[in-house]
Length: 289
Image 1 (tube, rainbow, N blue to C red):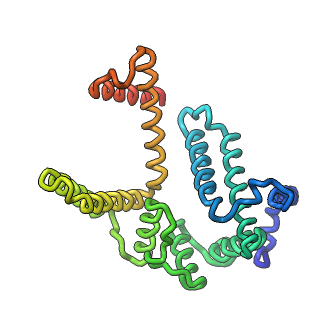
Image 2 (cartoon, one colour; image 1 turned 180 degrees about the vertical axis):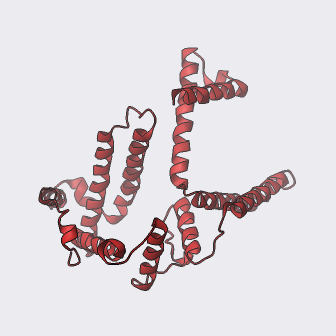
Image 3 (cartoon, helix red, strand yellow; image 1 turned 135 degrees about the vertical axis):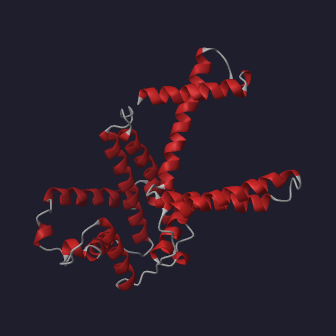
């Protein structure tokens, strides 16, 4: 990196560089003509799902570690192992990119490193900042003014999962000033959208099969507003939902175990009984914290 100065050079780790070079060699060996048949046939298209899967597994390991007390599967070793799997997929993707005539992994590193230096003038230059909000504002200005990166919501890629795309669309719109400054109107908008959904649900008896499209639209509006609330609360909606998924599964397993201890099946239990067990599972969860 031509922009690295002595302040950064002191953080270099020669052993780390050697390890990284060796790891790159392992990937190239796997993808060689006489390498692993599975690794050789992987493409940018086929590897997409693995990037998502391994990232979510890494997040799950981190969440397990952050539990109080930590989950048995939440050791720091588990986190390191899952991060290694994420790195593997990134390396395979970089190799597939080069196979398609694109940039090499060295290019990817160089491009991203130079971008980091360029977008942190308060670290690698003489700019002074007082808080993280100023850093974010400078970051967006550099993207727009120096890199010509469009900040319009219309530039958000269609390929993102809907939840993440909604968040990115809203962030882009907010960077252009299209945003509320406090929580109250955000909450009012969510309540408004829920009311509109309730109204549409109430019409199902009038037109049992005729309002499915409108129901989908109103439910989408509610979800979009929930994402907006999460953004204003500085909470990742994806991580929030992932946490709820795990809590649901944990409580559901508690119900399964309680039924198994009594030699009972779900089909033999009333909804009231299952709901009571659900509340007991929540109470047990609270006591274990």
